[in-house]
Image (cartoon, rainbow, N blue to C red; front, top):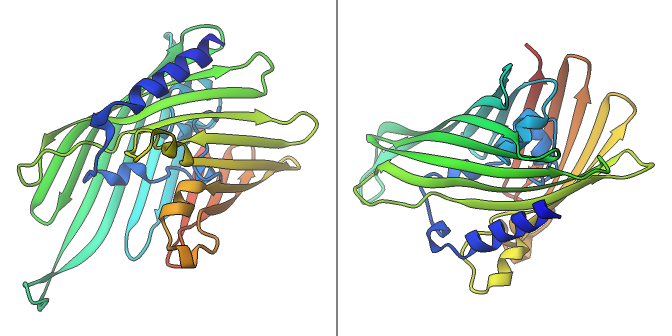
Length: 313
C-alpha cells in the first residue's frame, strides 16, 4: 500500500504542473514502442520481464531475466517509418543498466513556393532519441528506474536538440500475479531550437496495473496515460486510458487485443469511428526468440503495423 500511496501522490502532483502542457516538435516520442505493447494499445506501464517496457517505465528493466534485446520496426502512414531497439546490459553490481535508441524517418517533402508551385527538389526530416537507463530496488517488491535521453530532430536545414528524463516505479504484489506501475516520461528541456523559440517536451504521465487471472492464461492490463495533457476539466484527462488482454495459447502462442480511448475520441471524426482505437496482435515465443506483430487502427485513414523481435545474445 505504501507504493500505491506514492504512485497516487506522484500522479496528482505532476498533473497540476502547467509546464507539462505542450505542443512539441518531439511528438515522435509518443509513438507506441514495441509490437507487444501496441497489441495491448499501450497498456504497458506495469508489464514485467520485457525489455521493450523500458519505453513505458524504466523501473521494469529490473524484472527482465531473459531476452535482453528487443528490436522494433513501425510502418507508419505514407512514407514515415520508425524503429527502436533496447539492450539490457548485464552487470555484477547492484542494479541494472540498459541502452536504447529510437529513430524516425518522416520521409521526403517537396519544395514549393507560396503559390504551391514545385521545383522538383525535395528535403527530409528525421528524429532520434538515445537513452541510458538504470534501475534498482527500493524494497523487496518495489523498484525504481531512470532513463536519461538525448533528443535530436531535423527538418530541411533546421535542427533542434534536447535532453529528457524518464522516471518510474514498479510494485509487484505478494500474490506474484499483480503489478502496479507509475511513470513520468519525456520531461526535460531543449538545448537548441528550430527557430529561436523554445518548446516544451511532450511529457507523459502514466499509471497502470496488470493482473494475471487465476485458472485462466490471461494477462489483463489497464493504464491511464497522458495524464499531464491539458484539459478544460481535471477529470477529463482520465478519459485517456488503455486496456488490453493477452491470452496464452499453449506454450508458444500469445493473442492480444487492446483498446485506447484517447485514440477513439481524438484520432477519427465522429462520423467515421469504425474500429478506431482497437488494436490486436500476435506473439510467437520459442526458447531463444520471440516474434511479435501488431495492428493498430486510427480511423479509416490509417492502420499502423509493428514488428518486434526479442532475443538473447
